[in-house]
Image (cartoon, rainbow, N blue to C red; front, side, top):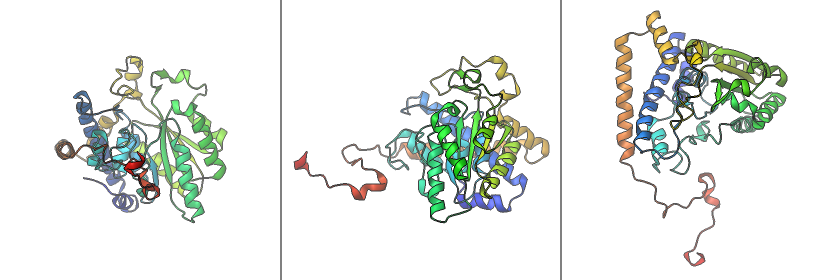
Length: 346
């Protein structure tokens, strides 16, 4: 059930297109199953902080992760559960961060979306407003200086995030340095509640690629196979030395900005348009139409994933809470630099 970086690389190198689609679809399905439980836990008062769902974005996010290989860098954002799972995140570790278990990767020290494993190239998010672009750039520059070639760095950003200085500076730096960056812009039509008409004047966000001197392409973010095709090509072009790749995906966020938001501002006409399609339902229909799966198999997968998530919740809820009196609060990576504390100095 849990994919590793090694299995993802094998998938990219040796599996058929059908197998790649099915693997990405399973990541989408697990993401939806997991986030449905997060909603229940949040409404039941079990989660501190916000919950931001990727409903409607799972195809794009999962496709990006499944286009990467072992050794690549991935910096997911708040709606990238599909990508996190596709990149190998353990559901238990995700739950540990949401429920505040000190056994999780962030040791119960940070917000629930700020989680990752940098040693594996899975970067914890600092902010969804462009900040991860220069962070990924920094990793790629460091690898270049160490003589490490053939790896790609990928991150996502919302349409509203393209209006920030970090987006401009990060993409401009990547272009000048010709870094193997894949930057996916999720145009979900709203920056929180601000429509795209109040965010940018260009006809399409992909038009910005020309100004930065990078490759740009657009795609339908509700179509899993199109996402896999375009993102697969973009990651390989970046890997082959063609510089940054800007991919703009159009879709609609099928929920509020967070679980605290009822999304009353979303235009009903957008919901009824092709942008409002549920990517999971679109992918299911395609699998059935092509005979790549059947209704019985799909339901069996759903049940397996429900059981996996329920088991993970049961495990994590039995784990101890963090003890502030035993926590030294030093940075995990630099604990050896911490000066010994004496009670007499307190």
